[in-house]
Length: 139
Image 1: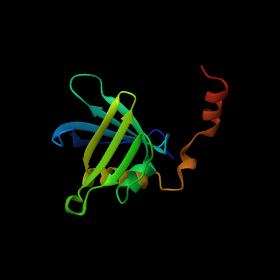
Image 2: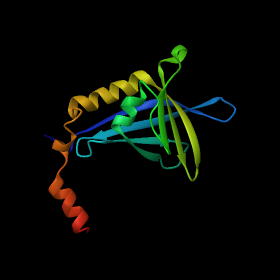
Image 3: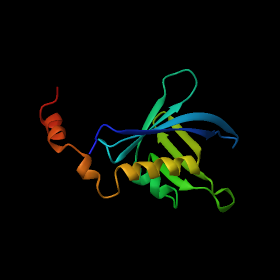
Image 4: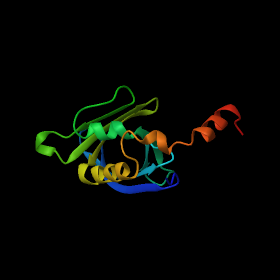
């Protein structure tokens, strides 16, 4: 099993601002078999370095069909008349953000991650000896 394999996808999404208008943004989603529970999302906002958030893969998957998440991250599907959108709400000490993510490319990305690391088989892709070594003897 190749733990170094990475899947990525670019998404054109929208940031919902307080007056309910939207601002187009580019984001990149990344998934690595060596970190099988996590999806990294890099939000490109202007010329600065991207803002990175790490999500549980299962959270994004469940959020496609129903509202899920507590606290800092919530994900839910669009309304029936806008079912090709997934909402992602983020909260941090620096502020809150609401994104509208197009469902087809996000679902395709997640589908590819499950082909690489099937649900329930994530532990097979974690190098436990290396993880324990990092915890016990940090460099």
